[in-house]
Image (cartoon, rainbow, N blue to C red; front, top):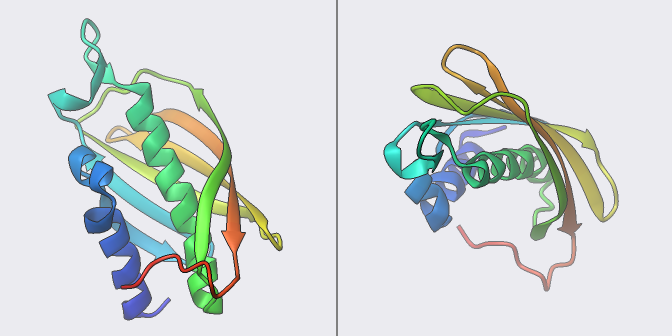
Length: 150
């Protein structure tokens, strides 16, 4: 990936999606077919106030974002990113969301004509596996369905 493509993914992750700004998601890295993002724990992200662990929705959102980013790396390399949306996602919560920070990783599993899939993981600062997921994303190659102007 070139620097311009990496900047597009960083801006998308950190600036263009307002929810990501609320969570504090930061773009870490991307290569063809993979991506990583990171975010810090903060009280606003707690789902279980007694256990003080991450909300499942925050975990799911981070996995969804990084799964989509992984697919975008391949689409950007092909110069074909016009439209994309999540069709289906499965999340398995394996451990409580405890930690000072969290890293999400996504990898493309399958490239299709319209439907693509990715596998995602969320680890904490101790490298404990918090959750895994798989996602299916609809990708549009049509020029009239513009994904974004950056």
